Amino acid sequence: MIITKKDTDKITGLVIESLIRFWRLQGHHLSGQFIRSLDSKVREILGGKAIDFFMEDYGLILNKGVLAEKIPYNPGSGAARSDYIEGLKRYALDRMRVSRREAERIAFAIAKTQKREGMPTRGSRRFSKIGSRTGFIELAIEEVEALIRMVITESVGEFFTIEFKSAIV
Image (cartoon, rainbow, N blue to C red; front, side, top):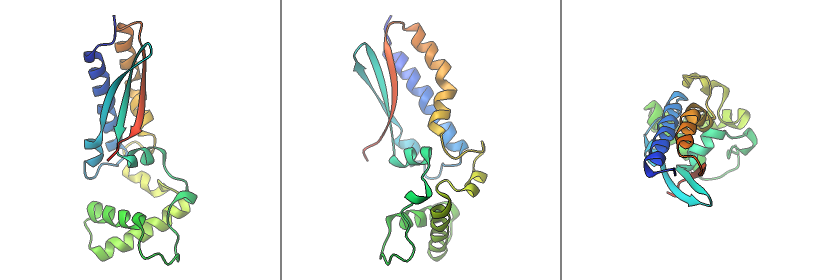
C-alpha cells in the first residue's frame, strides 16, 4: 500500500492543528496572520513523499528565540528609523491598545529588555499557559508523532519526511 492523498491530508491536518494549538498555548496569537499563513505542500521524493510546511518567517524566529546579542537594537546609534522598533510599536498598539506615544515608550522598554535578556524575555513566560515561549514546532510534532507513525505504518513501504520552511510572503 502507498501513502495516499487521504493519508497526507490527515497528517497535514494533524500537524497544522497541533501547531496552532501550541502557538496559542505559548501566548503568541494576536492578529491571526501566522495561523492564516500556515500551508503545506506534498512532494514526491525518491522512495516516497515529503510534506513541506510553510509559515511566516517570524514563526520560525519565535520558535527558536533570539540571543541577546542578535537583537537589532543599538541605543544611541542615531538611526532615524528602525524596522525592529516599528514592529514593537505595532505590537504594543495591537496587543495593549495604547496610544502611539505609549506604544513608542513600550517598544523601547521591550527592546532594552530583549537586548539584555534575548527573546523571549524571562518575564514573557507569564503569557504562556504551558510555561514555555519557544519550541512550539517541536511540541506540536511530539504531540502528533504517534498518530503520524500509525498513518505511515498503514502505508508500509514509503519513505516520508516533514520539513518546516518560511513562507514567501
